[in-house]
Structure formats: structure tokens, C-alpha cells
Image (tube, rainbow, N blue to C red; front, side, top):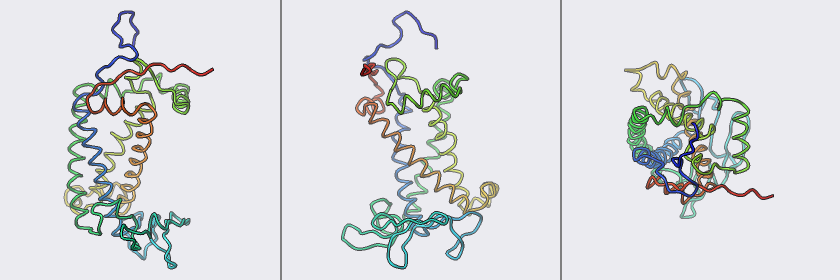
Length: 281
């Protein structure tokens, strides 16, 4: 982008429009949708808290991940050949009434809070439609209004290792852009959003289809493409927790950048351009 001498560039401290209405609606609907899907998905996982690779998986088969209880009554998370004790957090925990429960994820983290595989599936599948249709609508809208081309396109200069390393250092030092520069995504943000929009969310949807026996009737290649139904389930679980990781980093960045200003911009669309901070010498 070329700099101009005219007063067309917004100044530091100025209140400007940052997010379109469609972006704000999709953001909040998606936040609720992913939360409900995560919590209902954890209840579904509780029905069989083991993950496998391939087409089949049962208690007698070797699982690459397992959350449960040991014979001595301790909570346990096992990944591959290693295991850690998780009593009080996973596998074995105490509910609100002080009763010990032996279930992978505690009741406060699941929908419903009581054990019900049927209810969890209803919640999960209902919001899966919201996720899929919302993502489709958002991507079509973003293509039409130029959001993807204008805001997420990574230029040749941004692909340079020196440029990426510079952005990593700025993030590590909590140096956030000020003025008009704050309106544009840096390369790390672009890579993160591209990964979520075009990799993780589609992967969540496709692996969800791959786990459904009904998919075999009209698109058997989906399950086959992931190497089997149990492999699709494992990838679904991994992708879900990568989204959780993205969410946690996103929240931390919002807090560090100024939560009131950031949240206001996603509610009203108005964003006050941050002023440049004086470096302590």
C-alpha cells in the first residue's frame, strides 16, 4: 500500500470502522457454535474415551490415546506408551455434590452435564449444520466483498523468512502495530486465519462426515480418504483441540492488545486506532 501525504490515512487515536456486520455476526455465532460443539463432543467422547487409527477400534484394540482410570482408582491420560496421572481433572473427578465420578471429561465441560450420548449427539449434529452453513456463507460473502483477497492474501514480501521472523519477535515483545497499521493483519495473523478458515474448520466438517456410516452411501471416498472411520475420529479430535489452542491464543492477544477496544470493534464495528507507545530506554 502506498503512503499518501493527504489526510486520508486515519490518525492514531481516531475511531474508525473495522469489521463489517457480516463478519461480526459470523464471529459471535461461530464462537457459540464451536463452544456447544466442543462440549457436546466431549460428552460423545466420554462414551468411548479411546482413539485409534484405521477403520476399526474397540476396547481390545491398541489405542493411541486413552483417558480413564487405573485399577488403583486414579485418573489417567495415556498417549502412546506414556501416561500421566490426571486425578481430579480427567478420568476420575468429583462432581458438585462431592461424588466421585469415573468419566473422561468432567460434567462442567460437557453438554449435557449428565451422561447422555443421545442428547450429546443431538446437540452436536444440530450445531454442525450451523457451523457448515455459516462457514459456507461467510466464505462466499468474503469472496464477493474482497475480504479474502484484500485482507488475507500473503504477499511475496511477507513470505520472506526475515519478515516472518520480524513479526514473531514483535509478538514476543508484545509490540503491536499502531495507527492505520493496526487495521491490517500481519503475516502471523493471516497464516492463523487461513489455517482456521481453509484447513481446521473444513477438516472438522469432513472428518465429521467421515465418521458417519450414512456417508458411505453417498460419498464413501470421504471415509476412505482419511484412512478409515477411526482415523477420521482421531483427526476430528486433534483438529478440535487445535481450534481450542487457536481460541486461547486469540483471547490472550485480545487481552494484551486492549480488550475493551478489541471487543467493542467486534460488537459495534468501531475501533479506536492505538497510539504508538514510547519505548522505555
